Image (tube, rainbow, N blue to C red):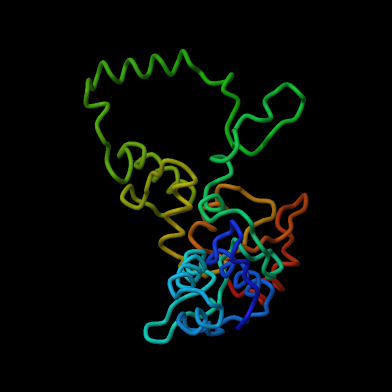
Length: 254
């Protein structure tokens, strides 16, 4: 394996090697499960140190593009991380560094960029109109709780949620034909934590998940951070286009 390196460039040699191999993987020139040259041999062919090649391989491994097999060497990953795969299943080059790709967009951009009076309404945040929040009533409830419980109100609660709330939810579910007891109910801090728990319990890196497209962006960020392949199914005014679901299931086997 030979390719040109610019030794007097400001771009480090290991970065040049990493970029060439990355492009070869994403273009399909290096097919999945292809064994990469041993570090010592590639270093000799390119006229660089072995550590330079190892650094390039380490970058590719950190991004999930290659894997190591003990005693065998480096191989192109059979399943590319979802950040490199489009909904059609094709690989795509991503130029942002890994840390930036893994951060939610809300951490990279201001959450209120649309609140400038220009008439654009953003649905990204998923938050309600704070002007409708019952501040007066909430203040009174907080005062009542602190008066009743004192400093205990600021301690950690039960790990599975406030018991009276779990009992109330179980009662509602039972009234709707779902047999549930308070110990069957888990209170989370929100939908994001609930999705994260389900992801940890039911999925593993490399699995495929189907979502509506478009869908809740927080779930997409989480799925990609866990190394899942995300495939979107188009929606219309009635929701997910189920007539397209069967072909997607046959293609991706989620």
